[in-house]
Length: 252
Image (cartoon, rainbow, N blue to C red; front, side):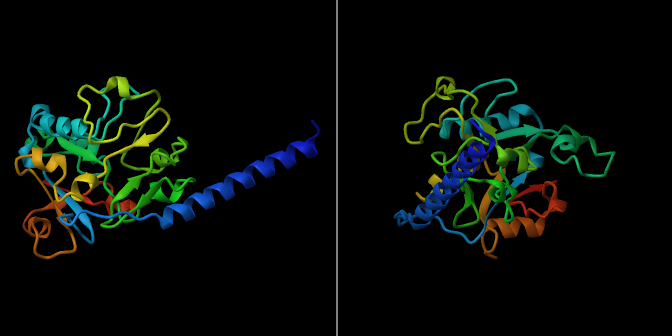
């Protein structure tokens, strides 16, 4: 095959991909659904995590298990693990914090980490297929059927909040929840702020399992608990200098 023919096929292939992606986005934009009458609504969903309540790995285990069980997250240990919510130390969770000396109680705390559902999400900007997108309430969602597995979103996310299914995740699901769809090999997944539960008028699974240590609500509403808690406690967010405007706050 000569070079001119190879070039033609290359350009034709890229053009076909671009047209298909454009058509897919147009179809997605027209899609609609009927929400439950009791669905929870917000202009900007936000989460506040009271880190003072988490003194050991055991104190956060029930919360992580509740999330992963609810969403059929596979239990696959090692470098190819899949996680929606996990815990770490202050040193790792807030690596950009300049303070070299911390109070002992903060050093011993466990910090729950998850997708921050940013106002300015870098993952959305880099997705070539439009599989990662923002929805009502500021949530960042993933369309598993449109994900092409390029992992650009994983590279762009500064929080390490996304996981890739290198193999079929279904054999690694301990207790299958038939109410939530499983994923497949070759797609990215992450925390959704339990969008499917919000549509039914329920709170996120991690919030219900936290015994009051995690609060969730509309950041733009002055009355609900989130604004009240933020106004009374010193809170920080992960990597604020990046300008992502993360939606998860931590009471220190």
